[in-house]
Image (cartoon, one colour):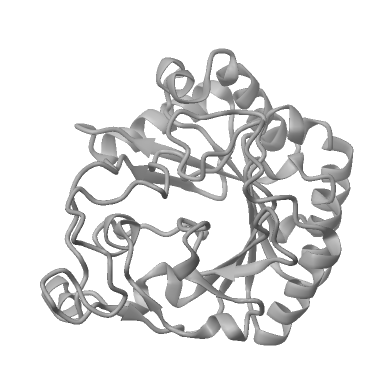
Length: 315
């Protein structure tokens, strides 16, 4: 599970094959935009791509069989947590796959909280999470004010949610979210806005669901727009910042990075962002210090999700 599942897989390329080929210039020969790092506010740790679900449009293609990103270990994660602590990082986000498939997940969660980080935990709230209810309650009692559990619901209606995640997934996800709510966890929901549905409609639909299901969503609702990965998108040039009235500092990769461990790799590496874990041009280095260099926006997701979509994965 990942709460960006409304977005298409990162292997999908733009319709125009001339675009997003050169990291320095666009297809029209204009200087490609880049984003300099302003500081590491959020460090994401990908716990592995294995998941109990195989969602229809999962951007990272998580499934019960996809181990393209293998489980990161507690020791590997702790090395990055210590480096992040020294850099003044505020937030650690855990994502997958379904993070609770990783056997070291509870230990990694505890390690992040014990170091004083705010932690954003992404989950589908189904059986993998429910196996660890006692451990989660212990962490909530000790560090609850800094732990946010973000549960993905692909829509506020059961049919659309299950069209994405599979039959029988709705009741299990709602039950897991209700347990978190009833136990006093800081609960957030990641939802989806369908084509033809404006954000206000989506939020009203989710609000009605929360009331009906008895969910106290005190850490907020994040609504991601539906995005068509087959649609052509413009390349982002250095001139776009002024044209769009945007600052590169507002883009996700200005303040976040994600640690991944690719299958066959000797050790984890740091990727530019959560959306592009496989593309080697977005591998920034082995350490967080190495990964602080600027990111050239040479991928459709850079335009589709971040610059034009205005979205971010963090809290």
